Image (cartoon, rainbow, N blue to C red; front, side):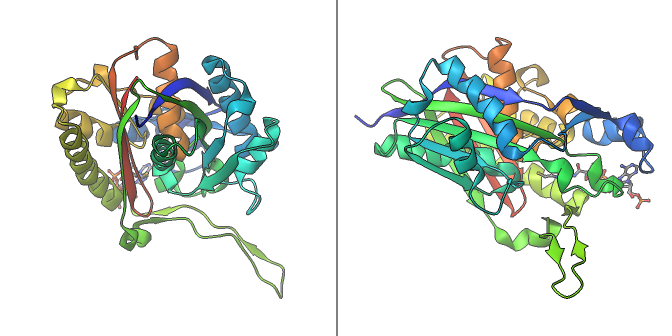
Length: 322
Ligand code: COA
């Protein structure tokens, strides 16, 4: 029988430093009330100079492994989603593997911007269903604060740092029911982050920062996420009322509320973390899942819809029976 990929552990990490909307109002022309009204965000966490995507991933991963009761050496695949890797290479996944003291198996990064966790989960599910892996660690870890222009009020208010993790095992019990991932690379200009460049002759460095046409991204996100909800439910023969929890990518409360309306869900069935975390890109869905699992909101047997939308554009969903 084809095995299911079952979630057996979740973890998360947020850096200590809190940057509030009032702190930002001292840096750029904005206000707490503007940011709360347009985005729902009140504060975000900022990594210290000593922290990295790999160091934050390690803390989140150790929590997930501990919850699962597994030995780290049983993990045969590690996938890290990040747009802010420690190095060009080795991959952050390899750095994480080393930090966890694991010397065997496979480790690689994937880059799908804010949809990274859903992409990683989809790949993990395929590995487990095909029998190619038995225990897969999926991590999203991001230091967005290092690619944000802190003088640009239209982007710096949105992003934060953090890491989320989950551990999947091959099981005859569900499990991930389905995953759906998509890309359309023709929207590059609406949301992108160029590389930092060093001029070979002068040695001068030009930093690459997130560039976004927010209003257009907003409209695309709402439309696209509505479509993916339909696709996910149809492919599982389920009705909107069958979904117990929506665990969305945390970009903007108004985008999330539109998806909840599409599902005819009350906001009480939506896991929201952005108020105090902002948009942590590929970490956000995993951080939200971890929070709701650990505080007991998500219970065994419930149906959870995870979804995300990000640069590319990339988008995706996963339906899980917890
Ligand atoms: N404080 C005060 N005013 C601000 C501001 C800020 N932080 N940022 C932008 N503004 C101003 C703009 O300059 C503009 O002024 P103008 O009318 O004088 O030109 C006005 O507010 C409206 O800007 P607009 O971009 O149309 O606002 P918006 O309602 O679309 O909200 C976002 C801006 C960024 C909050 C919103 O578009 C958004 O959340 N988009 C999606 C972003 C996202 O999810 N990205 C990641 C995808 S993974």
